[in-house]
Amino acid sequence: MHALTGVRRSRLRLIVIQCLVLSLFATLMVRLWYLQVDGGEAYQARAESQSVREIVLQPDRGLIVDAQGRSLVANRSSWVLSVDRTTLGKLPEGESDTLLRRLSKAVGVKAKRIRAMLLDCGQSGSVAGTCWNGSPYQPVPIAQDVDQDVALRILEQPEDYPAVIAQQQSLRSYPQPFGINAAHLLGYLSPITEGEMEAAEEENDTSVNGASRVGRAGVEKQYDKWLRGMPGYQRVEVDSMGRVLREHSVDEGSPGDTLVTSLDAQVQAVVEQQLAQTIETARATHDSVTGKNYVADSGAAIVLEADTGRIVAAASQPTYDPEVWVGGISEKQLEQLYSEAAGTPLLSRVTQGQFAPGSTWKPFMTAGALTNGYSPDTRLACSSSFQVGNRAFKNYESGAYGSIGFDRALEVSCNTFFYRIGYDFWQRMGSDVADVNAKDPLVQEAKDFGFGKRTGLDLPGEASGRIADRKWKKAYYESQKDYYCDIADDPPPDASDFLKRFAREFCIEGYAYRAGDAVNFAIGQGDTIVTPLQLARAYAALVNGECSTNPASARRSSTPTATW
Image (cartoon, rainbow, N blue to C red; front, side, top):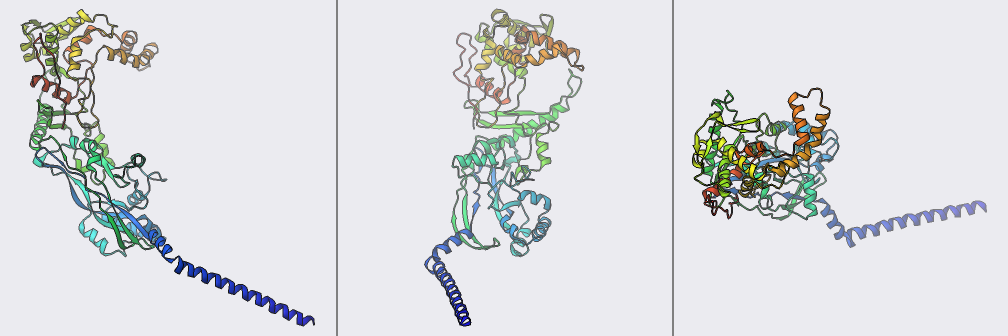
């Protein structure tokens, strides 16, 4: 009886197990039917969307031309090799290293540098300027201007280069009509930074992406928004290894706008050549004052259309080859551009160089004098020196020309003539050295000519220069007082006697605008600095008749604004 009961129980368990197995199979079959039949289309579409990648198609950047339509900056086609990091990561262990070594040999870029280029900026071990700042799904460019034979070989041998993409892309080129350089005017491009990308995303600016190159100087920066164009996007279907199976839709981008400048390439070429030649001549010329040849380490030249203020040509020395930025600049090249020993070639002397104006200042001081009581008939002594307090301010090479007028004073560039004018105004209107609001006709004239502020030229980074008047001197004193008073109270062991004496005097009365400051200002010396562009614009105001030297009606309606 017990044996029969045990058999029945075993059969019952077997039936239960069979029922469970059948239920599981039925559930699986129903699920399979649902996935493949009822919901198959939806899941297939989802799977396809996951295998479709979006590739950014960079637009052709807008051309930059001169007033005659000659190309100053254009585009050229270049073979670019990129690495798909998704595909690279799926390669078997050790195979990715083999691929990078093979790629390194093909393009002449060290494997170590390629690995550094594949790192995301911000990732541990990444190096700014080398790391990848674009989308993690975008192929990373690792070599530009690759020989066509190399690019075609990589295209024809995908099994040897499974993660490498060879494409033709657009790069900046410089046609250099008439051999011009114009690097400081045109500017250059470099990869967009992480901060700029974040700012663009906040502003919903779709014209840039992680692979964009943006303007950094010159008109490339000033008009970057219009020159960059809008990128396009191509969608491609890839397999599990990232290989392209077929192409899907393409959203065409749009090229950037063409920028027409006021430059004349032919005039620009002449100006650049003459500036370089003049510097070379000066370096070989003996300076009788110092007993050495002139240093002549930099210079600028500007051709301005006097009636409109339009810039026809502008050159700065030393300069550089804008091609060094195309495709990425090396650390050594970048150091050279910023090198003081090389003259800081990246600095534009036209708009950013600030210098004491010297004798170029005297025509504006003449206008100020004639506007404020002096006349063309005025005669003053052009002596070899002019005594102010206990100091004799000398003429250049101590020359003397007797009693002369403004015309002769400008012709021989007589310092002592203008010293007397500056001293006269200081005595009559500003002998109170602490009065920052004292009237100063020569200072006001300089400001009326636009000195001490930017011209408004549509180039980035323009310097404003400086008018070293009473207010400036007081502000400078306040900013430096503690420093020099500390030296005066407790001079460092290596401080020179001159520094100790200067610190004591500055601490006590460094705010005082004395007669020496006034006479120095009258000949463009002292702490006043101007840019070559400001000087050119001010001379244009003299040339175009906007300035009258008639003492009865000497008023300036406007000065031309430098522009393109």
